[in-house]
Length: 265
Length: 265
Image (tube, helix red, strand yellow):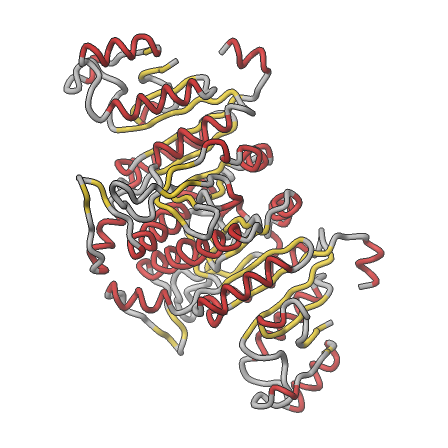
């Protein structure tokens, strides 16, 4: 925070929501109320939800999995682009506009905001899946929208600058956008998910760890208190902090306005 | 043109393409080459094509028609939003980005660019279909993107400012955007379609009428030389000219760069 005050940068909130909110109309409406009320400049990043899987089934598109991970073939790419960049993204935008929040929906192809690199087909070819190239993320374009009073709303689709769209992890997009924007703003990244934050005991919501530093994180990992699916999330979060993001807050979506969760610094 | 020179406005091209190009990969690639090469500031508006109808069939969504016109129920709205704002819009954006054209894909909900009014359910309820409110079209937001070096790419989806997306005619969107932007730019509207322009004899491509003024148009209508499906297109075109658009050119997509077609003034 000291650094940011010294830099005199404007605060920016980058908020990420996942399928657990996108799939639940009541939770989504309630979240969008809060997002609209969140003060200052802001960016929303949303995941996909189960709608793509449901539609794949209806359309007879086979879901190919390798080592538990989905392969994005041509039909699947078309489907996720339709669902993520089409229906989900535009529904969220219309819903925010209704509230008076000037949302603008984007994929990483729009304004060349998030150029990505298609993942190598070796050792496993996951198809049209890409990872953002952080050095190319176009923070200037995003800032132009934000400074004009708009709230960019990103779906989890990017492109390879060679004409191909790419299916991309939404957490990674949030991370990439927050890190790139931290050059221009005092950026806080909010990871909303279905728990209260990082818990000492995953089954006990009262065991919230309020703050974690990088040093503490290493100890929690060694002792096994933080494990499993939380590790890639927090590894990414600390990468964002190293990259210039002021704070990462891991929290339940319902706590966006009070900020109650785990603060990583 | 005199007025525009006097106003010292920057030129802007608003180009509309329909399903005949969107559905044909070779024609689309060739058109996007030309659009990229078109000099100066520009906006693209694209129609939908037959992909939505094909998908509706695959998904078992019944196509309801009243008096030959499609009814947009909730399922159909979701479908056209997925196809128009999702797959088609983002594919065009990625394809333009590949060429170095900084495209940004938009629905009328994004940036509240095109607020629309849902069509009255009386006498016929066409469902989630909307007509843009020209007094509310947000030319300032569009100009902010254009002046930042971006080329907005509009799909034929708008919103009602009350949370609902609306299926909207692509010709009307092109018209609305061109008219609104004519307050800020010296605007030319290009309607690309499958013929050379307005023809004296629809079966003879050599019978192109090179220019038509409002007065001449009335005479052509009275004599029956211009009739049928061309009438609503040209009625709209002359409305755009009344609204401030400098010129409307009706032409085959392949002639975008040489401008050969019918010029309405």
